[in-house]
Picture (cartoon, rainbow, N blue to C red):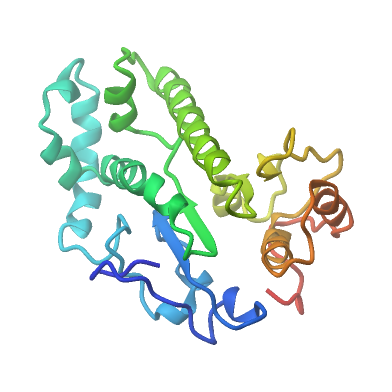
Length: 256
């Protein structure tokens, strides 16, 4: 985690993941939307971060009230193209999230001091004026906008993969890609969402024929970082042997 003084923060003994690794707490980085994941990293005690997009800044509260105004403006054809970037950055939290993630993405992935990078991207979340400006394509409705955001998400993921491939000869890297929106808004209803696991350097990512519960992703990370799982076949086998739960929440007694 990088704090407001741009210093790396080491996780303490009460952290949710890293205190369980051999050798004690490890360095990690959180990039993008920090909420609703504050509870994953309780040793931080708060949700303030320079890289967070809705915490620790005086105008963040204002942005939620200005969202309605920005949404109204974006429905006026051509209006968003003439808004100055500083206006969007300060008053559209979605725009600021995209800008912050993409601005710090390469440096975050290249930082070898960080054992774990948690990147919460706001793609393909709607609305996203940032992607519209990036791709410079006309948008007539929300369907067009979402399709465009999927293109933007694919571009960002491609950038992540390219960066990690360049680092693979120096580090042992595991990439896990998933989505959290269904889980956050329909917590009692299981659904098919993307869950891709790739040992960087393997010929292709893991595609599982059976259902899994993403709650096991924490244990997957722990086992990989501690050296218990290393190869792509080992990772696939471990995922196949995890029990499936009918909701995203693990049962009582599960050790998070």
